[in-house]
Image (cartoon, rainbow, N blue to C red; front, side, top):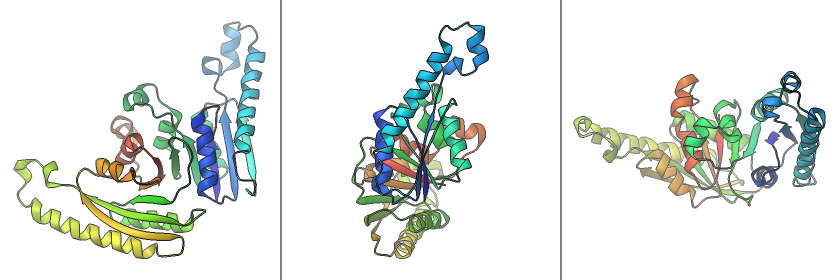
Amino acid sequence: MRIVAGVDWSDDAFAAVEQIGLLYQSDEVVLVHGVDLGMFQSPLVAGATNLQGYDDFRQALIDAGRKAIERCRILLPSETPSIRTMCEVQHPTAFILDSAAAVKADLIAVGTHDHSRLTEMFAGSISHRILLHATVPTLIVKGKARPVTRVLLAVEGIEDATRLQKWLTSHPFKNPVAVTVLSVVPSLAMVEPNVMVGFKSWSDEQNRRAQQVVQDTAQALGSPHFTVSTIVRQGDPMAVVCEEGKNHDLIVIGSHGRKGFERFLLGSVSHGIVHRANTSVLVVR
């Protein structure tokens, strides 16, 4: 398994690197640091403003980035077969995404400062942009790194459940975990009264399907790596997943991959869970 980790001097980045060492027995970890010079990213801009000491300023940031990478390197398990490093003057988000594509990463891992949703929309954050634009599974690490023994697997339907189950079995955790397979059926309270007619029978059918999906997923996960239990809840999917996630060390969800302006403006359920959850979230694409 090849993992790309975006790093800087933040505690969030150090936690992300340490977390992947606790989660996976990786074949290779690639530590990536993009040196962001802001408006001085281009030497032409620096020259136009006649910035005194530009070269020293640029080199100091590169050296700081390399030191951050070395700090992260020692946080990884000593038995990691391969640790590669990349440090260039690049926009951090673009560099992480481009590096993940170049090395054919199986996973991108980043820490999050846990900005508010409004701040993310207008100011942006690296974790927010990675979550929006990554094409491979993404691990968003929240808080300090910790051993993972309890995993909440939130599934929406058969296709979603199959994709998540295949990811977990193809990329097993370092240690056995207890997995709770959760499916959430929208509650009757979420439906407008004028469309309530016929919804009760639909809800009953959805409950039956949800029960079948979680049972099938539990059976497919059956192995020494997983101890599996199942639950079906009614309510708002985002709220229920976040509430159930409080009793787990990691939430695993799928992404439907909104596109274009709709994704930018509205986000997605997976993005909402990442924003609201108190624990780390693995988004499988």
